[in-house]
Every structure is written in C-alpha cells, then in structure tokens.
Image (cartoon, rainbow, N blue to C red):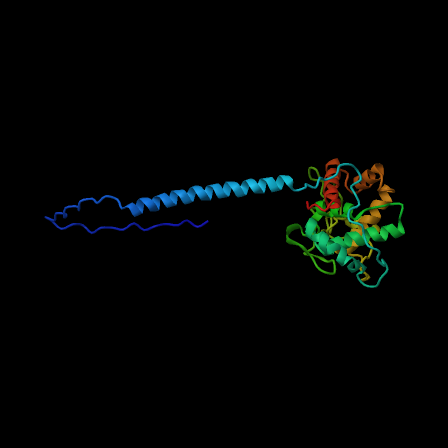
Length: 281
C-alpha cells in the first residue's frame, strides 16, 4: 500500500519590532458542532453494530451451511460417474466428456481439458481392463501432486492436451533423497544426456515411458508432455501393477509402484478423495 504524506505549511520570519495582534476572545463552541460530533459518534456506533450484526449472521449462515467431509479410507471414491462415450472415436476422443467436465471443473478447480484426460483414461480402462476399476479421481490425485494438473511453474494445458512449457523434474543424480538413474535416452526426451529426469504432467522417466507410453488423443504420437497420453499411460501402468484398484491392497500396490513413498500415497489419496466429493485441493 502506498504511503500518503502531507506537506506542513511554513511561516516566514517576522521582521524586527513586530508584535503579533492580540488573539481574539474565544467564542463558545457552536451547538451545531456539538451536534455534528454527536452525529459522527452515533454513526460510528451504528456502523459498528451493523458490522457485528452482519458478521454474526454470516457466522450463523456458515454454521448452518452443510460442510462436505472428505471421506476416509482406501481406495478413494470413484467420483462423478462418466457418461457413455466412444473411446475409439477419431481425433481427441476425450472431448466427448466436455459437458461432464465443465461443471466439475468449477467445483474442483481443475481445467476441463485435464479432467477430460483423466475421465477418458478411466473410460478406456473400463473397457480394456474392467477388472482394474481405476477411477478418474486416482489419476487426478496423482497429477495434482506431480504437476498441479500440468500447471507447475507457470505451465498451461492447451485444448489439445499439450502442456507447455514442458515440465521436467530434477536430475536423478543420486543426491540426498534422490535415486540415481543414469541417462537412458541420450537426452532426446528429457533434455539431459547425463541423468534421467521425470517428464510431463504425470512425471514419467524416459525408460518407463518407452515401455508404457501410448497415444491417447489420436495424433499418432505418444507424448509424455500431452496430458491425454500421460493420463492413459499412467492408468495402464497402475492397472498392470496393482491389479484390482477397487481393493485397498490393489490400490496401495499400484501407488507404491508409481512412487515408493507412504507420504506420497497418503497425499494422493487425500486429493483424490476430495475430488470424489467435488471439493478442490
């Protein structure tokens, strides 16, 4: 906030022998000023009462408003059900979920394009691996932790799912708390010819992407920087590792395969559970 300053008035030096004129006899204060003071004081009191009253009513309203509790337990809930779509439709098939994603986007503060990607990936797995039962909420929870849904450090998700600028993790050089993974791609995918780095909104290392990466938006390219491709690849990987993700054991096994960290697992669970009841995280 800018500071507001005032410039004080100055008085010229008085000439020699100058005597100031006698001060006028003070007059008694005018009743109008007393009345004005009374009005100011009364107005302040009334404003204070009004503020307290409004705050009290807002507090009462807040207490009456139903609070959405984030459910406990593993696995997190499946969230808003997906409408039937043709997962083999030409082009970016995920756009069929636009009407499903739009209102949900406002509630959970995730872009419609990202939600479409998670929903499409779950829909594909429901047809190709129905025994897996992976929910879009699990993918959303992982993407939230990994890259803030493709918005980490100012990145953004385009309508075609491409995340730019590309999101790259730290070099996996064996520093404290970091696994050492020497370069496996000559730096062609992650930009590092010395050590591997995690890539894209779902943070795959090059070696894993080369094995599991899949094209989900129909452009003929499996791109780790495209949130459609990354979400479906993550879903395939999780289902292969965990089996039945509708069970606690299956979900835990899948998440620990994705990132071997109990803290990470609980963070994903909490965010996925919040999305399952339409709460932002």
